[in-house]
Amino acid sequence: MDPPAAGEAALERLLAVLGGPPRATVVTNDWHERAGYRLRARWGTPVWAPAAGLPERGGELEGRPDHTYEEGTPLPGGLRALKLEGGLFPAEHLLLWPAPTGDGVLFTGDAINGQAPEHQSGLDDWRRAPGLYVVVGTTMVAWLADPPRLQAGLRRALAEDFTLLCGAHAQPYREHPKAALAQLLAQDWAAILLAGGRPAVYTDLLRHTAGGRRATLPLRARPAP
Image (cartoon, rainbow, N blue to C red; front, side, top):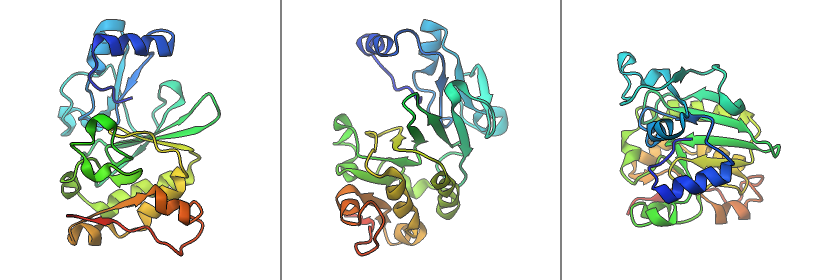
């Protein structure tokens, strides 16, 4: 999923973890081809990408995927796509995966991200604390095409079963991810952005609201410095 560039040692670790070459690479938007074609050249792993990302459809895919998908297209591993509108990219999708453990995993691409990985903390200082954040970097929130429309698309995920939320630029978020996403989506993103803030929810506050079941301590966006 959205494979980042990786050195030889990382590729060997991936091979060991999977027990063999990956069966497919699936990207959430047309800016996330990343190392997908390198994996294809090395192991023959096919690349799946959103059809809306094709250049002939106005997208910005740089390579040629083996397969394209839209919402409703059967995907490898039982993945299921939900199309998003109003985000950073016209080809953006959520991906839902029923893990073999029985858990549901929500892949959110660039739309929603958790705490920044340690190696990115200097680049994404606003995501140093555990929580959920809209998009990635401090300036990218200004690139959203239509925040209310993006929120409407993301709300569809609240009808799904998931216990883990994975953004493309973040550590996995495990603590009441659906409650955290619901609180994030309850905010007025357009008003927050207009005031110079950044929509976010923070895990420490979520604990005080009993996983989102009480509204006595509402989660608010951290204002921009």
